[in-house]
Length: 420
Image (cartoon, rainbow, N blue to C red; front, side):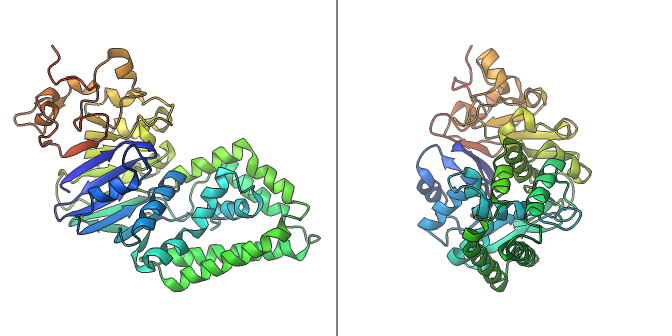
């Protein structure tokens, strides 16, 4: 890995790993702060190999990926997608929830857009790019980038620890259609739902996916869609819509989308190195607890989950060391503050914006001004970094912030390196 670039987003986040062999791995994407996806695509047009990794299902990332592929279906040579996990009974609850939402939820609801995209993502991407470019990711799988192997730590595809609230909501919707006195359409939907989930599981068992399994998913999705008008006329339809529309249900679904996201790190071939990176996506603290036993004692780079907000802070981050922390915070749509615990860590923080930073609000200066950077020779304060003094200079750490409003260095306050 030659360098890491954090892109400032209006919504979502985008972190790009640049390899030494003119290749990139783009982890997530969103609504860019400038230039749209065309500016992003142009920046990496000269790369010989481009890969995209969606850490979790979210509207911003799905829409950005769709925009890129509309411009150039062949832009990414590999697309990595998270697998939707099963509970301890082998039930893919998030897929089941998505199918219920697809049929019974009002189409103008945002949850409908997200669920429908998840259900159709494999067929849609395969039609645009080809099935041989799509790689499902789950715990205990690996992928290779720039001569380094990366191990996927999460999500666990079996016995996933769904919350009781979410599990209960899905179970309640299934019960609504289980009465033998309902019209035949109810049982037909339950049967097609099981077949669709089985086809999805078959699709995720191979890497890359196989077209025959994608075709089966598309066929079943279409059959469910044709049955939908009858299902919406069933007596329990309003009850299911009410369950889907509950704020608690929506919150639970959003939590599961984040909690089932991809967490990965590099596979060490020997001792610690600057290739050591822990990418957390939108992980919840519970997800970090689940993978804690497989983490290294320290990393060169730690990516803070969920823009570094307080609710996503995990005690694990205080128990492992990191030289650098990535935080794509400051999005205009984000109202939450950065967790103050990150500021207490002896790491250099790289943020796309200082909005929502408690240190900046209290001091008016970047929290990194008093930090020691060990990538300098000799090690010294960050204000001695050539990139902090000259935006055109190379950053010894190899980490750059790509933003129309600030310099690429780790000093986010917009002030000269020496302000005294």
